[in-house]
Amino acid sequence: MNKWIGLLILFVVPTVAIASGQPASTDPAPANVAQGQQIYQQYCAACHGQQAEGAANWNKPDEKGEMPPPPHDETGHTWRHSDAMLFKMIAKGWRHPFNKTDRLTMPAFEDALTEQEIQSVIEYLKTLWTDEQRTYQATESQ
Image (cartoon, rainbow, N blue to C red):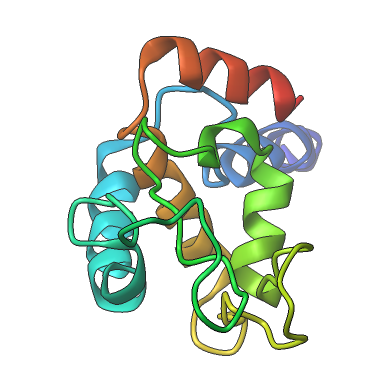
C-alpha cells in the first residue's frame, strides 16, 4: 500500500503542480485575460489608452525629448517583443534608448503587481493583436 502512495505522490503531485502553472499555449485562459484587462485598466490605461491606442504622436519625441507611451494594440510594436522582454519592461520599467532624459518613462510595477498579474496583462495584450502578430510574438518568445 505504501508503495502505491509513493507512486501516487511521485507522479500526480508534479502533474498537478505543472497544471496549476501558466499555460504554455498561445491561447490564453479566459480568466487570465479578464484579470489582465482589469489590471491594464487600473495601471496602464492612463498612459497607454483605454483601448490600448497609445498617446497621440507616440512615435515622435515630445517636448522633453522622450518617446510617448506607444499603443499596445495591433497598430503598435508591442507584439514584436518576447514574453520575457514584455515582462521585464513591466516589472523593471523602461527608458526608451533614444530619450534625451535618463528617467524611466515606463515606471516599474514589480512592487505593485505579482508575477502572475504581470503575466495576465501580457496575456490580455495578446488579445489585441492580429493572428499573424500573435504567431510572430509566440516565435519570439520561444
